[in-house]
Length: 217
Ligand SMILES: *Cc1c(COP(=O)(O)O)cnc(C)c1O
Image 1 (spheres, rainbow, N blue to C red):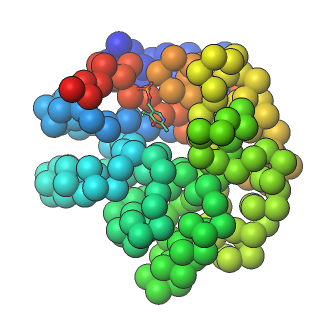
Image 2: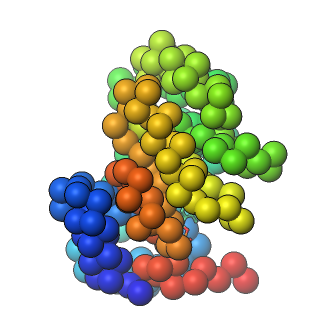
């Protein structure tokens, strides 16, 4: 456990998959974690972080960004349309583009701002009713719709169902990305990031294995 251990395991998984060292980006998911734990990981030199709420990120990151150079922030949680402007200003990447309305709002705001974060389309690979994301069968059409809006779509993202073998979902996401000419795959969390790397993950989102368990109390 901890940053060094996870980094070592990522390098091993890259090697086993015949991937270049450093081809996988580790996003340290800092949501809900105490400031001191996040600061410790910054002190160790890590710079890519994931948050799942715009509000929480807006409160926490500006002071850190004043002290540490080169931080990149990834939004990995659901984005409400009315928070899209704030998200566009604050994040370097948004992994949760999951519906046409949001894509249209981001396109309009990006036009105004003259810039846009890297975007990942979230795919609901397990077609779970309670989970956000585009259905696998609608992914090609949605990618095309985003491209028609001039959005910088870099890749796909998924969160597999908890009770199924994640590798099947990672393989499906990789297939959908390949046939749409998308090079980035945001998949893999604390319990399955090595399996995600084996299936081609370029961005793994690891929280508790780096920082310890989240305390929601
Ligand atoms: C919380 C979260 C993670 C990190 O989960 P861990 O199991 O703590 O590694 C990754 N991705 C998303 C979308 C999350 O919400």
